[in-house]
Image 1 (spheres, rainbow, N blue to C red):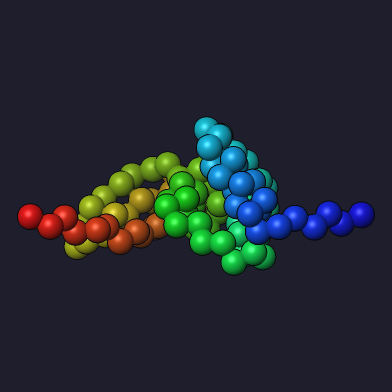
Image 2: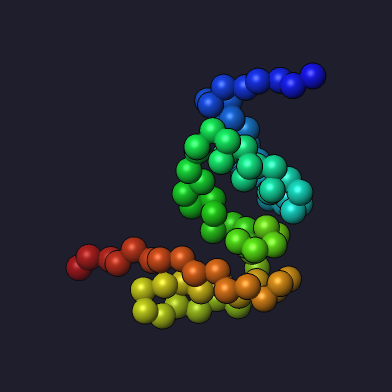
Length: 88
């Protein structure tokens, strides 16, 4: 039996998931699909897992050209995130 949830309940479920310290690849995949289903933007949460293998993002970090590049330890994928420029 399929249970329907509202968009606000889905957002609460996503926030509760990312409040945890550790998560598995399967759980990350389910949460990402839930966000896509309800058109919820993950925002800064996207920086917590690898774009390719969906594991917790750990590895070598580099900063250059306005981007933060994190190389995943598990699969070797380069995850690039644009950094905000600080105004002086």
